[in-house]
Length: 593
Ligand code: HEM
Image 1 (cartoon, rainbow, N blue to C red):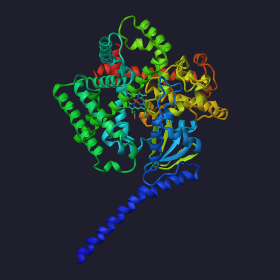
Image 2 (image 1 turned 60 degrees about the vertical axis):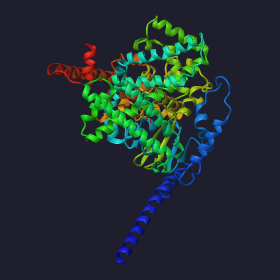
Image 3 (image 1 turned 90 degrees about the vertical axis):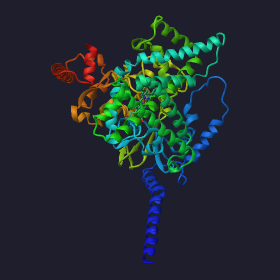
Image 4 (image 1 turned 30 degrees about the horizontal axis):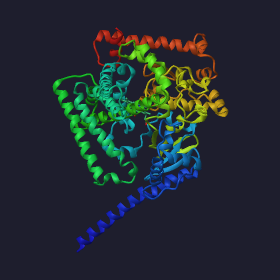
């Protein structure tokens, strides 16, 4: 009797504890976060229990989808209104910074330039990828670079980033040529079969092309297996996108039909990737992305199981980060050229002139200025990543806003890319001419942009567009500009969160001092926070003139340059004496020699 009583008591305690945890997660915690934000003047659409604002968002999306499509190309390119229509309405009602909820996740919407800049330049590991994404998209992304945080992210970044630097991408030109040729051949065949004319729906072709390139880059000679993995991943992506409006509601744990489908696909993909790894181990070394990920993981202090997870998750992440973004960008660019035949003709001429009947190589693509302008304009109007999201993993402060731990921050790329204040009154029109002087020259605030931004940078182009815009928009406001010129703490350039500088978790200044160099792709950047240098740069003296004058800062820079050169050449000498190593320096050395 006593035992039975004890069991009932235990069950009651467990049930109570469970209820408390659920109440805390669903009601108390979201309410606490919202009231902290509300006390600072932030308002937003009222959330429903458990769902937040999901139903409103869904209704607005459905209504936008029902608007009958106009025939022919759109006069104004406003993809934000079609994709995220609810934001326009909320922005009008609650201002540029407001709070909304996806399930129980509280999100601050930010397009206020000063704050966006602070967020995108923040290198603290306390500002991370949203934890809800890792939970909701676990089957798709696992714990790879796209969703991980803290030291785990730094570790993955250290292994993956060098593999995607421009020097490595240059080495992929041949495989890109191969995939392009098979795409062109398949279109030529269709045109021939149609007697010189064919209507081709390019979406699927471009997706397969992009998947093919990544399969080859990632899996080398095992690329046919890579294509199988790619198809399964697309199916998994499709299943996951159906669940987008169940975010933060806990539905992911239930054995619903789509969850069961996702779990099965996840398992199949894992087996396929680990099969390739096994074959690779038996057949020997290859110089592809998989090999680098594999070696990086095996050289770390990870268990066998963790190495497998690392390899599987990061292969999936590279596919997902690379294939959709590239495919969508290329498709929109072709659509825009097709609906602007004058630009299509100009670019065709440029390509024919540069190539002279040969296949374009890396150098040739660098000479195609008009094509670059059209790609920039297409990325501006149709950015494949429309939102950049982060979560405060600890209590943080941006501008005057205290952001409590657990709150997410969303920066709307589509809104910033079409803001008439930044781009002018034709901001919703296709006009590649605006990029004639590069990204920095695309708005009428050229003088405020630091010289290296005008030279064009490599890296995710859209992230760069975003960061440059923020700097320009900030400088447009005279009050801000004054602060910008004199403020010793205001860096003149904005590095995206995913720039190589962030791999060091913001510690580079500690390691190398206030003035040091790093590389964005192949562009070398001098990082400066030393107030005197910042002042000289921002007071607008022409860099051409400045760089030859023996002023204090230049003398310092020349001395540093000499020191860095001596240091690097010493390492090269030591290397020559000690023998071969498999690092970036060795590759650069061999390439140069
Ligand atoms: C038009 C093409 C592309 C665009 C517009 C683009 C855009 C972006 C943006 C905006 C981010 C930052 C996301 C965030 O911080 O939340 C990002 C991250 C990333 N991208 Fe891309 N991307 C493109 C192509 C690629 C390709 C081809 C690859 C690889 C094959 C790739 C791999 C990655 C990876 C691994 C990250 C995560 C970096 C990190 O978290 O440290 N991207 N990309």
